[in-house]
Amino acid sequence: MTERQSADDRNDREKINRARQAAEDLFKPARQAAGAHSPTSATDAASSAEQPPRRQPRIFAIPAVVPTHAKVETPAEPKPTRPRAAARRKTGTVPSSQLGRVRALTSYGMTRAQVAELYGVSVDEIERIIKRPAYSGNSR
Image (cartoon, rainbow, N blue to C red; front, side):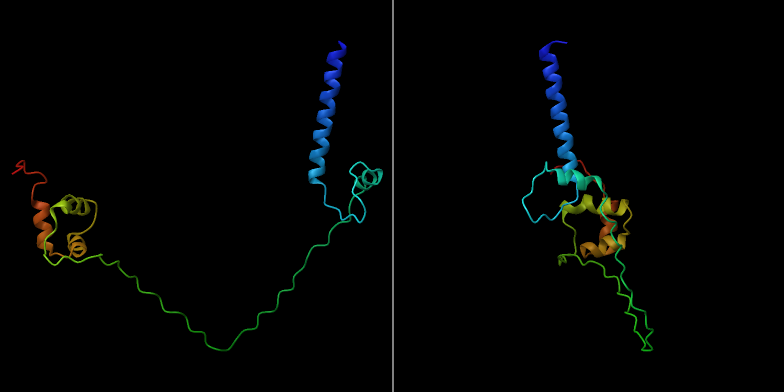
């Protein structure tokens, strides 16, 4: 080995040792020091060799459950509410822009009565829309 290679190896070892020491310092328990803090002091090296005293587990007392003789009322089950349509149509017809949506809703599982309630029209109107062809071919 040349002198340069051995110097590089020595520098690499020093870098590795410094990084290892920095990593170990990160995981050391924090100590309350009254005096000045010097990381390379001999006392720190000696104290790190000895194990810190084992911590006592915290024990919480649970109060005893006292049964009450008072009758507790159970809350009533809330009724499921159905969402209302945002706006009811007064005309009794479904806009032509929604005809495809009406067909899709009925083909994907909604009943005709549910779709009629959604649009605020009669079931006959929904049946009329479903029976009508989707595209008639006339653009006039």
